[in-house]
Image (cartoon, rainbow, N blue to C red; front, side, top):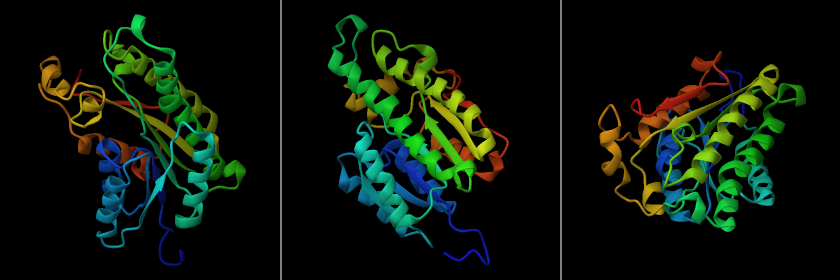
Length: 256
């Protein structure tokens, strides 16, 4: 790609981008000029629809790439595929995540806990490691930005529902802070957004499809947020406008 008249197109990988916050971020980033790799685990039709919408934009470039971020082998293959199809990585959004059925800790199985941390924590670590290997100026890269999608649950704890999810997101907060300090001198900024009650289908996947409606009275703004509102924060953190912002945890939670 020639850069004689402008900078090369930035390449962004978003995990879990077939729906919700990930899909909204993919579409907004594409509107801002990014080439986007849309990662998904199972729903290829949804991922392909996001890709179709991006390619319908003027100059829109996108691919879908299947990988379970809990698998280090699949993460390695995903990054190699993005390298080959879109070019050098400029940015990563660690968005892939899961919740489970509401439960007290006393009733949580080891299988549930391993799944929660394999996807929500180890998956983000694998992906960030591969992104740093590509973007670090110390390693010959051009720099870049990483945004981790945490949750307001990391500071609320989610008792009687998702303590394991909250704990996993607490790990993401700590990881964001540590990695930001580690690679700040290598041209990489690392930040996180912490969404609150957001209207996405992750609640239904955890058995509480009406969770936002049921809990929005606890939000000072008296409503749930939208995936698009979270996407705005993520894309700003990726952008040159946030050039001196790193190690930040930005709450997008309506003051909850």
